Image 1 (tube, one colour):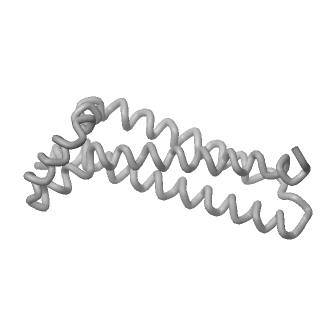
Image 2 (tube, rainbow, N blue to C red):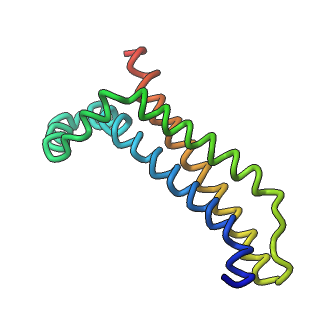
Length: 132
């Protein structure tokens, strides 16, 4: 492993954690927010077809507390890793330093999108059903 790969390894790991967290929060949207939105828009028949095609949605909906718990746990872990990585030094080479800065920005952006998606999913799964 050369010097460049060694310098970028923590940044790539952080980007990977942010991407996995985004995937988990997207799963929350699919299990809980998507069905609620489809029913609210009057697309109950389309939702029935979707559940028929992808029956795993029912399992995800039945275990939504665990699904959201895992997702928020991953978000907390990813946030802590990104917070720690903000103080890691970037390489001295200007091109590598620019890549380092870009990867940090992308990681924070993915984390913020994941947090937003998970929060919207939690609203649809836990808060809005109590108001209806």
